[in-house]
Length: 226
Image (cartoon, rainbow, N blue to C red; front, side, top):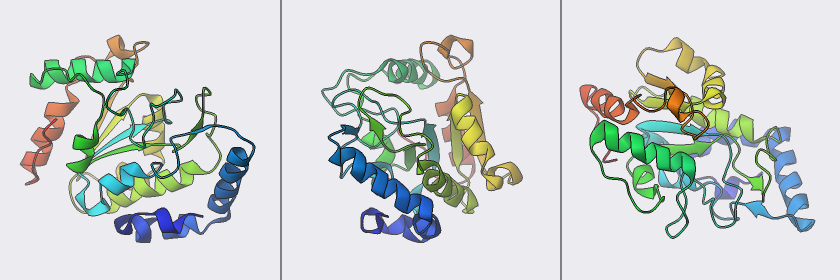
């Protein structure tokens, strides 16, 4: 489908699923959507940014999102993140609030989480594209198999890793990964989604950031500078 775009560290883990008919169909469908002048986010060249910034052998934490932001200029290939200069979305505002309560880290003015990704935080959405203005529009088009394989590749590694699952969608995705159900070497943190619709029902006060770092340090891995 798009082997030339897959970062080197992920190629072996994703080779099988990328060769599957569903992945080839996804590539053809995306091309047809763009040929029909439909606007797809994020733009070409940034759709695998999460894999580019966080090589498989460097993953320490996985934070799963659902699909990219569907507003102009927001999506740039990392879950929950937006480029500098773009207004911080409400869910990320709440993530920053919890980070401040949890770790005493002052809220940032921008929403660019590339610094997390470069430290080993895999900011992966379930679907890696979306049509402008239509949330969830590229669900069930073939991305699930590819991103499931990426999560499974992380879970299959021996390095103790933290999986942060916010909301039922992320938790459902993790439930499909047999390695997560069968292993005790990883830490799986679950709470409701940080969206303003649900954050007050258990996201605030869940302290995922300090728990993640304590687990990493306990297992001889460097903590994340959130």
